[in-house]
Image (tube, rainbow, N blue to C red; front, side, top):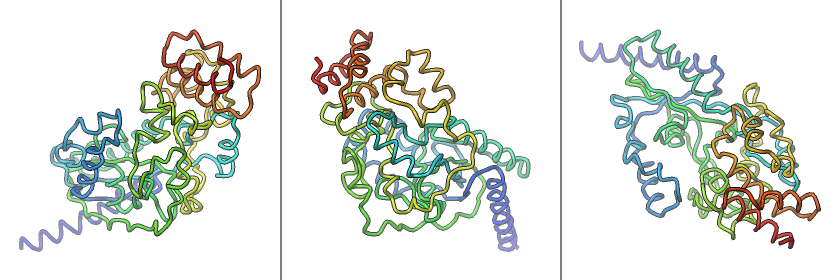
Length: 360
């Protein structure tokens, strides 16, 4: 009898898991998968990465101890993890290439052009969690969108959403890598999906294209060299030897995604919240360098860009202006207008840019 009850319970959970996936798709997620909580392999990779200091100033990567790789320590009672994918590509790859190739254009990583994805995904995940609770009021859960120590990529891989590529992003055979991830930790014993298999093969395009050679080996990224880390996570001065390599990238970097063969299958997102706001996809460096703090806050309202603040924004744009191919009176005037900025970080990067143009 006990065996029969167990089989019935398992069948019920299998059916419930299918309902969860259907609800998730109806809420606008492109894929929903389920994983167990065994992240021992990923834990080993994380500890090795931290031991080499590749996290740089991102102290939060090690601050929470084992909570990142042992879900039950973060949310007591967790038995299953619901992992979701939401595509965000806002425009064709050809347009991205054009912006990146224009030294006068301000290139912003495409994930940050629209509404802050944390808010979008969290709202949808909460609706999914509410739906689950409505059908199983004893279920315990917690929603995450890059908001706590969660190994979201390893979880997505185990849940069958894709595999972790050589550039450390999750890749899907039908959707490439232009997507966000979110999770629901739950105490429900849901059946786990089959983990995704790796399809990178012998390709090393992402290693070759990385502007700063931050992908030091397949599946190994030294964040201290990564453009996204340098322009977003790093609070102080950008190391001088790396500045010329940033080009016109002022917030994040998409190069490894742009070159990935699997992204030929990526589709333009139909999500209105991920459409570019405030023309952030079509701004000139001189234009955004002229923004005062109030303008910066207004133009980045509701965007993930706000997290870096006006000081780091000016720091990043100063570097991009220093990398400009053509020296113009307007460029020099703009840089000199920030020579007396209250921030030493801004002043130092402005001086560097002026020296690059032999104007200081």
